[in-house]
Image 1: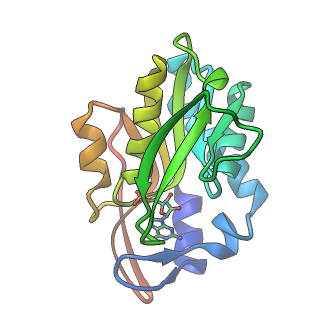
Image 2 (image 1 turned 90 degrees about the horizontal axis):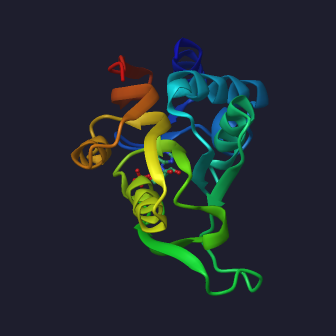
Length: 194
Ligand code: 5GP
């Protein structure tokens, strides 16, 4: 997505050769119109899949899952990282190791919100090690719903995430695929068509 690549080049900050900061427009302050465009693009890419639900993980996936849900006219659900007292015990859960925070946490979704009839698109802000997305894929498998694919806003192709997802036969589409990055220099590669 050209617009996204331009914003990453102009406003992204390279914290190391592996970590990109996009707080100014994607995941702390959010450019709402850019999020809407991202949602439209995911909806277009997976239009043929008869999606009934969009799934993400709190917090940084929420704005993109909501935009995608609006574009597809379906609900979105976000996995929670902390168990709330209101949640009860009827949850699907998976453990996820966070690459940026260096800790492992449990993500969960109340069982009522994923059903075997659902056709699910998973959406997230980054594809890095793939741990978050694999955790969500495990939850979808446990629920009996059909996972139709994954949409990632930014992929770092030099980390192992895509390999793990493709190994499982899950179609994945990333809107900006970074091959390498250093201050002042971000290289992208094109996505393969579905
Ligand atoms: P994973 O390693 O599971 O693919 O990525 C987990 C989460 O870490 C992503 O959803 C994203 O929130 C965060 N993350 C991974 N790499 C980066 C990065 O380079 N920059 C930022 N801001 N977040 C990242």
